[in-house]
Length: 220
Image (cartoon, rainbow, N blue to C red; front, side, top):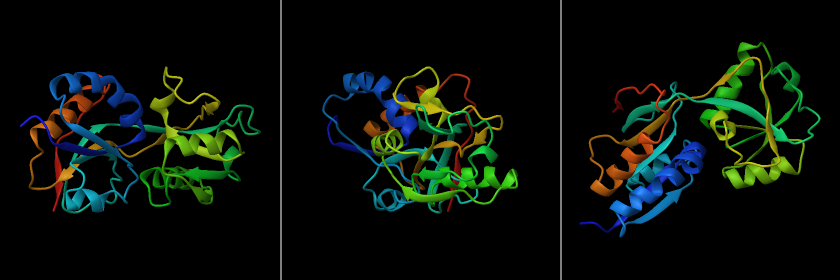
């Protein structure tokens, strides 16, 4: 069967960089499949994935809290960068200490991004970052950063040779913020449909060739 629906949750990197590159190839092979791309904020998407409303997710999964009942296949190491509007007062910041009093915009307080930022602050002996506003969409993050002095945190890959977010500047910190690995997340003990598996394979193929890939890890 070549029809049906494939529902996936994709991180900013997967949705903005990988899917646009591979969608024409997918459409050529699976022209009749209806494709739904959902939001990808961890851990909120786990309920949909567990219930079968999502076929799979490609997201950053916090290593300290692997979700139970899912198969986790690491795909790529990622790094985060602080992001501000052009001409922001902190545009020349080079350390997290320079941003210790910043008002941060995060996807959620439970997200892997928030955890990575908090851990980076702790390693520098800094108090936890202040976050009074959260936003789950890339378009919303872009709009709020462009019109405020908030400081966001986004994957470095969005700024590596791409101009996806005009009006925003990625800060070049001396100490990198290491994010959780980008992973393929599926329900443990189940197989993807051929249409869903084909899309997952294409998205994994679109990752940089230099990326080290790990094995499958199942948390029952």
